[in-house]
Image 1 (spheres, helix red, strand yellow):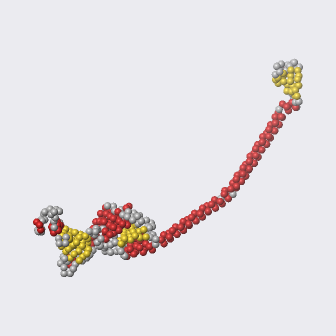
Image 2 (image 1 turned 60 degrees about the vertical axis):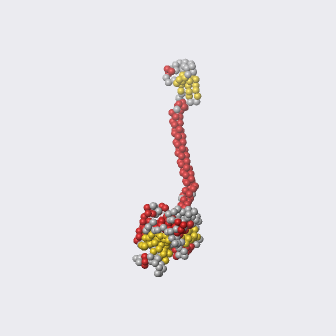
Image 3 (image 1 turned 135 degrees about the vertical axis):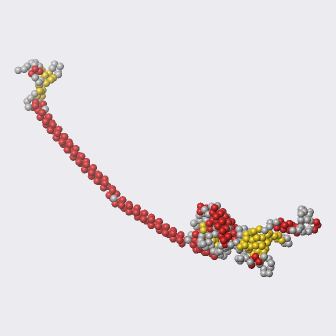
Length: 419
């Protein structure tokens, strides 16, 4: 492209200074040259703000990044829409081929597109599966990372569409189950361009609130394209990064966006999320009554069993009449004592009888009895006073001193010798 003519001999290649600045047209031309060096590019995005006026040769639209608040102005021929194999409307995911252009007259940038391809359902599903595989490989689906939900949350954060059926269901079911529960609601877009950015912003804001005990992300059912924001990688990683437990309640039972796998709890529907997060006051009171009745019954059974055991113990002879054992033993002791006394008496009597018998025999056989019958014991007395019984006549020669013992005394005599 030729360099535009400049007044005052200013050329496109000259350096600009405070004394020799470039005119606006030169700057715009240079920007246009640099931008157009990029050449043709393939770009993926979501169509928003589509404008096709009948009779015009140019259609205007905005191509928005589904995962970020970034957009491009796009121009193309209306023929690309009318001849497209599928209808292209606002919200459609497309891949376009175009060249960047800079309009020097107004100083605006746009992408001039010559080919538009709709991103089919098959390709979207394949991308979702690839994202699932990536996040699973990173361990973000690990059940050990799931945070437990509080039994009775005092304040619940709710991210949902404005005046949506999902919001109505969650609030009505929760308050019917536990009227005291409080909600902090954040209404965001739940489909289309900008939904991911708004949901992530609301999630970060609620997660930073220390009064929020659990966060519910809720949306009703819809097509695969409608639920695409909830399979966005940015949103999934934001859920994982949150410190507050997050419940995913997207669509109906068959719908499984990627955020269901990274959330701490997946609810089949928004109504199911309310039931899973908020306990039923009626059911809890019934459970408390049941547990109280069961504990009272268990206590009564225990007391009855212990009373029965005490009665059995008290009816045992040893406890029914504690003195009986002592009395019985006393009687045994008395009986044994009497028996021992009788045995001792018999032994003494027998010994006395034996002694008397021996005494009688001794008396009958002793020298006293013999002396009483007229016999005497003769002893010879020596000069030194010693005496010995005279058993022969030779032991008492004539003149020997004798000691004669009779039954009633002792006599002194002198031996006259043997006859």
